[in-house]
Image 1: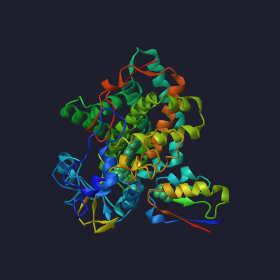
Image 2 (image 1 turned 45 degrees about the vertical axis):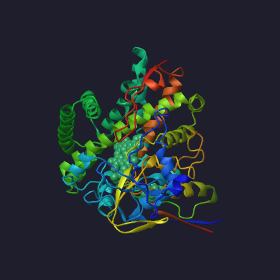
Image 3 (image 1 turned 180 degrees about the vertical axis):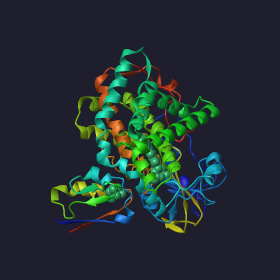
Image 4 (image 1 turned 90 degrees about the vertical axis):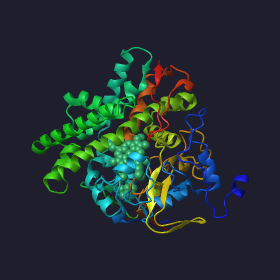
Length: 413
Length: 67
Ligand code: HEM
Ligand code: SF4
């Protein structure tokens, strides 16, 4: 209660509340405890970010839902008050062309409908057998190899990269090239130069491949974008850029959910048993959403800026103010999810905001869900003796990236 | 209890969440994924799925009139 009394008269947060917040290292799977204090004391309150500015932090599930569909809340990162994630993002904002990630309706709607066709729920579902084969083959290889194995390199990283290769229409013969370069882009041990070279190699590769698809189109995403390029709806550069963006947005995130999800399940053997013993697709699908909620791996918050004054609760967010939506804060909001700190694979978790909310909600969510359903539905059944091969307190977590993940996950069986 | 399903099409961001929640009532247009209402007066046994669809629609584009 003293926290509430200590609030300044204007209701804003004390200026020392820094964002992003730090986690409790003894509880590595839980969000930073400061988020719960913020939600309880000032659910619409100010925080200080890297550049010294004090955008609003929104921590309640219901407030996030209301604001993230509010047309006065904008994703235009050319606005001076936009709360950039870091100096790099601030520096490139003005050089970045209009994309689905930095526009508002109606432009956003137009751009997004352009890239949507391959992500139709039915089309994604049709990829299930192909994804099952990718996962089965990788598990076969892991089981034939030495113990312990690093689950990240054996399964978590290759699954999304091979699936995106499949989605884009990368021929099988090029999968190794595609995978090693996309790993380099994500590798925190790679130098900035190596990462840039790898990303350049992928861009060049996708451009050449798009050229081939223009003459011999198939049913894949690149061919689909190729048809739009031919029809003059999209430029070739935009199409290639979108291909690279899908790879970047879908690789590390999905990989992290595979590794961190497995770690969470190994820490909760009763929940793991549920998933291992019940192969009802609804159980597996429910487990995926609960793990997405519980882990909420996107840790830097969804960033927006107010275009007009907005009253919310007893606060007024002024036009030009930055707004940060911490997704873990919403997903651990006890008003939305009772006993939110409990991993409970049977709870209805479908309204979680791990993919964000509003028009920018994750484009790849159906694909990510499918990949996770196949992995979680297969790995623990095929390797029922799977265990961690290192103590929890020796695992290294990524506290600074966009997604909160584990850098290496040694497992044995 | 009767239910009428209304879709605010310009708002729809084609996420397909409604199709996952209530495939009997929603589908997606082939070319751009925009939602289609297959049945705007769904039978009572479909109401739970439709309510879930309205709750998870990221664009708040599904309105239900229940009486
Ligand atoms: C478990 C895995 C994933 C998580 C947790 C995740 C999370 C997110 C979140 C939180 C956003 C919202 C950002 C915002 O509102 O500003 C987002 C947007 C996006 N995601 Fe994902 N994502 C995942 C997988 C994927 C995959 C597999 C793809 C593509 C193949 C993808 C492509 C995108 C794109 C293109 C956007 C931008 C959409 C827009 O701004 O309209 N994501 N994702
Ligand atoms: S859930 Fe909403 S945004 Fe997504 S397709 Fe259905 S109506 Fe459109």
